[in-house]
Image (cartoon, rainbow, N blue to C red; front, side, top):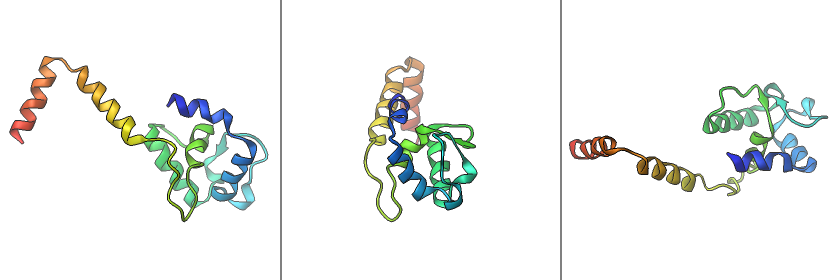
Length: 117
């Protein structure tokens, strides 16, 4: 998440304009920097915003800030997303950290679950 927060302010105006042309409605092209209103995005843009907001754990997607725009910049309609972030490795590291920090009772519960099922 820190990486996304650091990359958000680094988005150039040309990159923001490209995202706006692809994912925002023609009558709502931005004239100011983010955040943008959710209603200004087209259907594909709103679907991506919903997905990204859910993955990042945001409670609302009413205002779209630079963090979401960084992730949205990886998508181009009709093309597979560009690989900028390795979420599989991120999730793997988080699970590994959680397992390392378990107490004895937690380890026993996991062991019991594997044996039982």
